[in-house]
Amino acid sequence: MNLVNDVLAHFEATVFSPDESGVTRFTTVNLDLRALTTYLVQAGARFVTITATELPRGEGFCLEYLWDSSGHLLNFSFSTGSKTVSSIYDICEAADWIEREIHEEYAIDFVGREYEPLLLRAGDRAGVNLQEVAK
Image 1 (cartoon, rainbow, N blue to C red):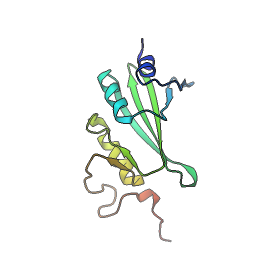
Image 2 (cartoon, one colour):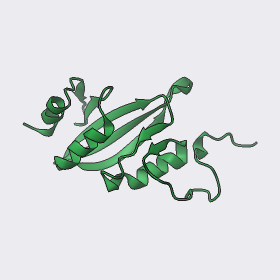
Image 3 (cartoon, rainbow, N blue to C red):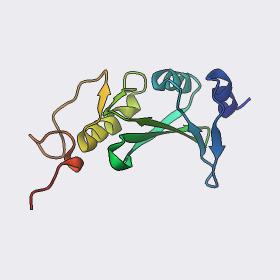
């Protein structure tokens, strides 16, 4: 049984779709991000990145977590109406940099971690991409 089938069975997930590029995309409405991360790390999957997208009309954000399992890419999309999501950094240290970048860019707080001073603009506040620029 491959990791896709293992994830489907272990998390009782039923919604997934492989796309033309070979990425298997999971819809993760009811999945626990931290439990999923723990499972993937223990299964030997390698964390690749997180992509954050602001949803229209102030509906929140979609965070897409990309993992590699023996050359097969797995994408897990999590939508949040708030600006908080659980951190996976303590489970998967490779998520450190991208969680900090997303926090700095979009002011999304990854619950369970502390932040160093902002890197892009010292002394600025989080959410630099969402701040109104003075004209």
